[in-house]
Amino acid sequence: MEIKQQLRLSQQLVMTPQLQQAIKLLQLSRLELVDEVRKELDNNPVLSDEDVSGGPAAERETDRARLADQDFERELRTEEGKATDKATREVDWEKFLENRSQQSPLPGSGGGMDELPPIEQSLTRPRSLQEHLLWQLQMSNFTEEERRFAGLVIGNLDERGYLDLEGIDRPDGTRTPDLTIDDLADEAGLDREDAPYVLALIQRFDPIGVASRDLRECLLIQAEAAGYSAGDSTYEVINQHLGDLERRNYQAIARSLKLSLEEVYEIATEIQSFESRPGRNFSDYDERSIGITPDVYVIKDGNEFKVVDNDRGIQRLHINEELTKRLLADPQAKEFVSEKLKNAQWLIRAIEQRRKTILRVSDCIVEKQREFFEKGVAYLKPMILRDVADAVGMHESTISRVTTNKYMHTPQGLFELKYFFNSSIRRVADEDIASESVKQAIKKMIDEEDKKNPLSDQTLVERLSAEQGIKIARRTVAKYREMLNILASSKRKKHF
Image (cartoon, rainbow, N blue to C red; front, side):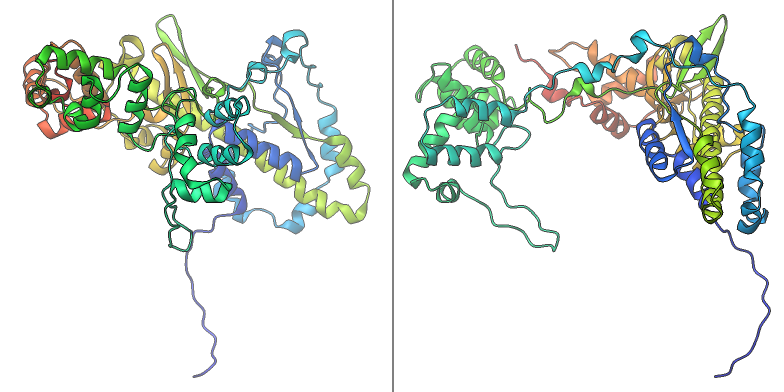
């Protein structure tokens, strides 16, 4: 071993904190961007926000917060070669703020309806399944032990409304033991012999069949509530032939119960009216308050399509000049304020660059998919990330980040930007077609089929080739059909 000096020349890619922040902001969704801006506002005292009213006054705002006159991408590439932190601390921030204060002030936000809270805050949240059952439990005349047992049962329901007593996996790889009704009774201090009776009462709460342990028990409870009992044909079909019923093997049911096919079909139709998922109409979240706000709008102006960004709801950022001047008056705080001002500028520019990049990519998508915006999904063209990356001069990974969780409002509806990227399917004597268009063609054929004689996957392959010149394998048709949540032809067939 020896100690010696060596001179080595090497190249390496160094991602500055500012570049990491720009990449992070680029891949955030709209809601995530709002949260990130709020965090920066809390952590950076020199940043200030201003609510966007979305009215005509806001549209005429001069965006002082954006420093668009400098090429942001060039600054990212040359950030390492710029002035050091020492040079940054020597910037005359007083003069900088004085120049900003001479600019015309932003107009005030509009009043009236713009000051009202959003509609989401005015909606009442619907009850969850557990809340609905607990309300019924309070209205019952159960004893204290029975109430505790019922609370444990309600607390162990899954999203379908079934009683789930299976164990769960621990972080260390072990698994908790499965529970039983007797275990719940012991925990609640209830006699084990009374537990099945209390459970039966809970299962007849609204919705009927809740807290069932499997599908058969759920359907039997609903059959009993409808007036059927053991020995009735409907009850016996559920109790003994649920598997044949799922496979639509009506002949086996008819032979076993000595019924005609017409009677079996009537029984199957009635059983289908029962609810297989008692918790279907209940949810832990309110779907009405879950909305998608588009990042860009595509508007047709004459014969041209224009892309307009949606800034509504995103906080405009600017530097808090008054606070900054007070902090700069303190020599001990000057270094701190300089660093925060630098970070504020980078954040404002990163947000502006994000907006520009989304607009550039959206413009390219509109240009390449013009027929889609005019005529619909059937005219969607094959397109991959590389096509857009080459057109806008960016890397494919950047295009992937831009199109993730970003939405475009078009004359054809609301779509995620990734929706427009499809693999190509070869056509005979014609240009290739997008895979999404093939899916819609398959869906249309199945919707128009004869329900008593549904189209098989092979028949779909032959019709796609004969009618539209689309060469596709049967397994590909089956894959697309499953992606569309469409059953196989044997399960779509109506026997009567």
